[in-house]
Length: 251
Image (cartoon, rainbow, N blue to C red; front, side, top):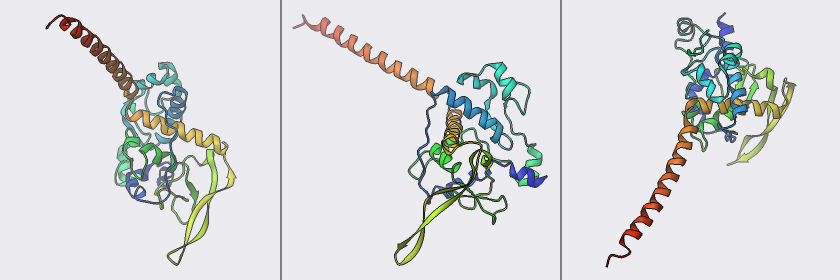
């Protein structure tokens, strides 16, 4: 049972992602667009199916998904796996007491994970996007998987059925008189249920949702801010013209 739960521990190693941000593979730019409703909805479905097995989003309620176009009925029928009420927060499928007993601590919450991993010349979304696309089989690891962005990662590749299995390819370069292995690309070992392009798009949607979840009101805040600035600009012009009209006959 413990091995089964360990296999479901999505993103458990993200708590140590600061190590990965210190060097290694460059991060790819995440295709984040939190105004893309279709992308956010697909990302939400991936999140509840693959991430909520072990991780919670304790600061996000299911009914907030109405902001990205879901109806209450759609949420109830397709997205509620850990509760029966759309007003509840997104709890993980693991019992907190059992999780603490098995792992020594509860798996980290993912509500603001995309906002907390910036660095290495990129954003937190860039890190997650690259991280979820650079797993490869490694029989020397307990989970059977490793990761280029986070070497010796302590979590499995929970999306492997979608992506299939790939292995990294390296070239040998001379640096300061020593042979250095430099990553040059991937070789597909076994196919997944998605093509490489489809998988990248799916991960992009998942990361897009994680980005949105970190600040659901961001789009509204930006939109209101733009209108406020336009209002102030218009008010400034009117005030300036009134001031000129008032003082034009004053000598």
